[in-house]
Length: 217
Image (tube, rainbow, N blue to C red):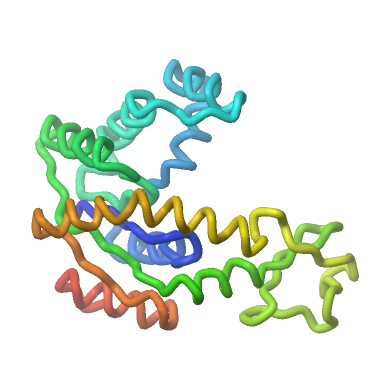
């Protein structure tokens, strides 16, 4: 049984790592985005409440978010562990998560922080291009199209989303850093933090995580 929180800035690849880790540990990968979508789609009381804020472009209050997390962590598939991706984002949420887990007779085993230099993150995120026609995704460095500016699948024009512009990315990273720095100190003080070098291949990151968790996978 292993209960893990996975941290990392936008572009660090934590979603990819979480999916692989979840398969290897036979535990669910729980992302806050998935929880929001599931509750809204199901029309739960918390989902309806969250949607009132999301539809206005407002932040969902912590009590609503943590209510959804509490419900999700109480489900049967979490009895042998979980990987929580995208939360907590603040000390307040971290305290709330600890209280939820204690109430359920659980505790965190490790907080894995995937660390990548800012310049590498900007390169990863700003290099993404999307086809206007079929939405196929490319990367100028890691997965470039055969013909520059054209989709291999349909020949459509490739463009850069506003979210992938350097200025927008820098702002997202600044916000993350402001939120995450206290969390890193918070979990380090509790002896739960495992920092991983994310500036390497997906497999090498996974191996380093496994070594840090005492697992040979």
